[in-house]
Length: 139
Ligand code: CTP
Image (spheres, rainbow, N blue to C red):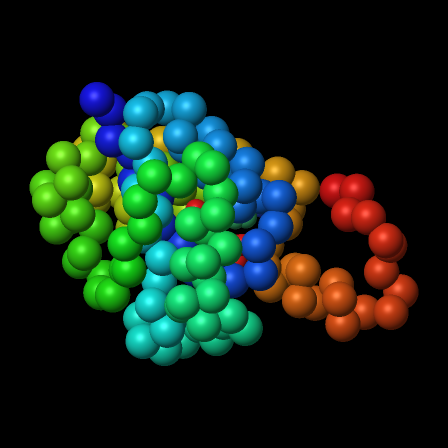
């Protein structure tokens, strides 16, 4: 059995998240998603609109996801890789080259999935605040 793991905040759910989770699950048999807790986001200086419990409930409802764990500290990825016998760690390619992930390549296969349409939770929040925005995101 091939175990995949990925991490994120998954605040305002968008097609980029769903695509990432679908592609991640296709790389193996069991997909674990580490969701940043509200406390960890505070450490990262990130403010989410949805609480951890709400973000977890949304990600849990996605059929590609087999298990959710809270992400609570920076060094946790190494611990999770051992604890859950992870074969592949997946992230969106916005993280390619980041020192937050490069060192993990010594411990596990790391796969970066291309982002679609430059979407992000931040962009959704900004676009919704802009009355000029197109109805559908084209690129
Ligand atoms: N991701 C992706 N494609 C996108 C947006 C995000 O593959 N268009 C990936 C990220 O690279 C990460 C995961 O989805 O692996 C969770 O992303 P998240 O932390 O929620 O990032 P964003 O949607 O970019 O949110 P924010 O604007 O808050 O950073």
